[in-house]
Image 1 (cartoon, rainbow, N blue to C red):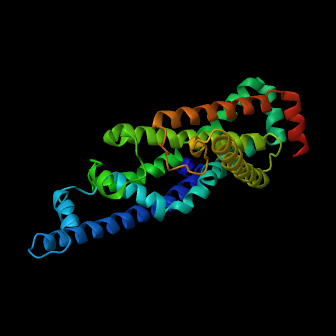
Image 2: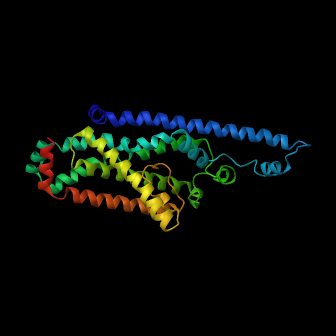
Image 3: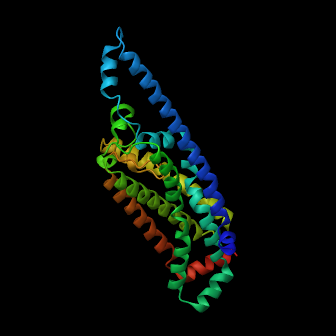
Length: 297
């Protein structure tokens, strides 16, 4: 147990800090919407009295007075307004603890010693295993925010459809279990893309801090490319389509279902496979990789 804590102290600290931020954000959104619901109930009581001047609104309000506050509304509000700044740090949450361990493995002497005991293929398999060690972290943090909100709201999306016009528009909101599973899978796919970006940088730079910094710069550069070239130039100007909106690697927690969750998951899976192929090509040549590690020793 002590060894586990010692080896994973950084990720444990990160999880605790971000969990507090997420739980606080969820709590604030929950309290805010409960305030709206209470205010609506008070207005409905006024509507039920004679002499009201808001007949149209009253008829609609009385008709929907039994609609319960739902999970999707509160969760979307928390993601949009309470913890939106975490989006820009999500990459670092995954990459920092990952690259500390990966760069340690890529030190020149360790590679030489490893290659004398095992094949280069085995070494790369162990490297990938280390790199994927924390791809579950963002999914866990998402679940930590989801559960308390679920426990205090309804899973019927009626409130989101009628009143809040929430973040998610597809039919997946009628299937809570499928929604949660799809959401967590999507976050894990993003995490894998983040790891692959960092591994591409680690191929050339094995020193931990420069590797993390350059990885983040590359991550932002890819996002700018997706936002400007792919979204605006290719899809909006050439194809006159908004499909490019789902090409976004910063919106980790949003799960854009504009064209369906299946389409989003398939797209992100393709991005995972493409980025993995680039990693494979980058690390394929053992001699060049060892020489590069020697330069950075």
